[in-house]
View 1 (cartoon, rainbow over the protein chains, first blue to last red):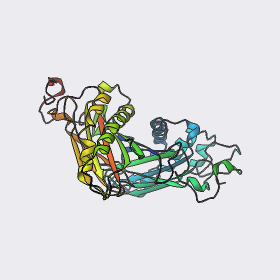
View 2 (spheres, chains in turn purple, orange):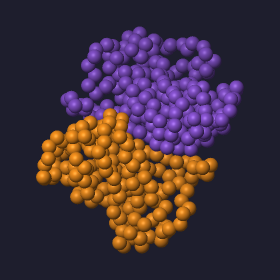
View 3 (tube, each protein chain N blue to C red):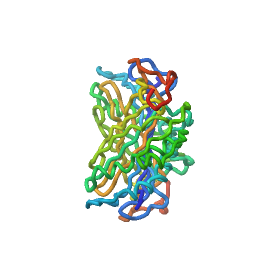
View 4 (cartoon, rainbow over the protein chains, first blue to last red):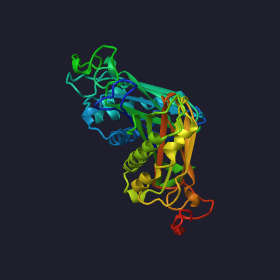
Length: 213
Length: 194
């Protein structure tokens, strides 16, 4: 059921955006895996079996993305995920990515929760400990043609309300997805927008450790 | 002159399966892209030496970024190409100044050798304009299995006063070459052509 056709990695270093040059550039990265869509061209009521099979795909992608970004795990401050489904598929096929994509990054970044509980739709236990990827992984998805661009949202890994790190990265794989393909995407960054200055919660002031503030 | 680099992007495109056929080892194409300020934006300058110097700097930087992203020894690079997109306040000759006089020599150092010309493309464009960077074998331009292109695009560049400069390096040809022509195994490597 899992057939990975292409893997596309993208890393960018942002030094400035016409303001002061940053001492340390913002590093943002994304990885897109182009998979065959086993449900293309028909309505398949039971698509859940694919979700578990995507777990190792997500874990491998998360590790590849971190390696391509060439930064330490502790430097990752935001994350996001997405999917672009080819024309012979449906949006719901892209939704298969929510659990395996998100939890691959969260576990890589130190989350200690229960992935199986989440898969079953149960609430997870918050550990109350800092820096273990407590936040929901924001996402977007769409059905699109080859080369379609997806704006993948990025938010802080521990507190979704960190305003200076609200961001998005545009991801597209030239030539994909074909009609019978899905591009599954993970994205991460090292933190604040390069000239962030609109106030709000700072990452250093996260206090509730509830995934939000 | 040191380039004022706003953003630096590196992409690797790895093909594992094409038309149902396993590609082993996968073909891999890397593109490194710099978004720079155009020092001649908005005016006509007879002399373009600043951009020529920037081209030399970027040939080394972007070539090295590609090789590092592929994780290969420099000599394992197989094909290369270069391209530039000039923002609206610049002219096509600005792209030529970056690409043609001095970018090639340090790129050839980054990939070891490179007797063949570095194929190129250029255009004027705006934010998100895509350019197809042509690819050719670095030692023999007529190697047919390595005629290819890879797309470079930056969502927020070039602004009017910017230039997007891309260098592409691969460790492979097309995924399923089967249209004949000169093969890698037949390269003489003397004239850069065959």
